[in-house]
Length: 252
Image (cartoon, rainbow, N blue to C red; front, side, top):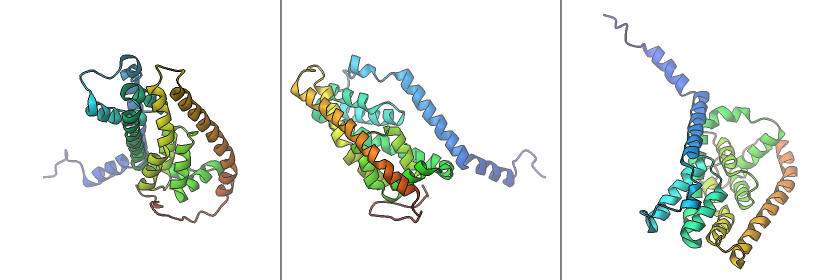
């Protein structure tokens, strides 16, 4: 007899196509990011600066756990400067810098992976207009150099850079390597400032804050000069070029 309760193969296939469609995956990404942001509001990680790290977790385990928490928080849009200051205040300059850099790479990798798997197929057809097209071409053809400049001169918000790179055709290796190398100076400056925050008049604190100010000035200068390059790139042919460590495939 025909089992009327059993779904037909055609219906199951259609449901699978709908659930795995680009827009369904994008919707899942939005839900995940919204849930992560809500979790951050409830957990209030800023309490680390006021209350410190839990006393029952100390030593190398605390440094590792902070790095993991750092990565998850950055993927949930917690500002990195706050986390870097907390790393310095909790663990000092050396251990804090190592933990913050590891968390930076982890968080950027999580965001890049989510954007690439869940968002690229839906968002890539929407990359239109001179500025978006030019930025996408730079990231796709010169991914390592472009991302290295973004990390060295942090004028673009961290999360925005991660998801823009994910929508482009930049390769994983180029993205993570540029993030790791380019984030060292600014991350270390914030961590050192956090470690010396108890003495705001000390030379170490003033030097680190001066470096942060110079980085911001450099970011504005680079952004101003990049305007002409973006305009030129927007009008250039779309023939892809790949270099070492850069993947021009549009597949996740």
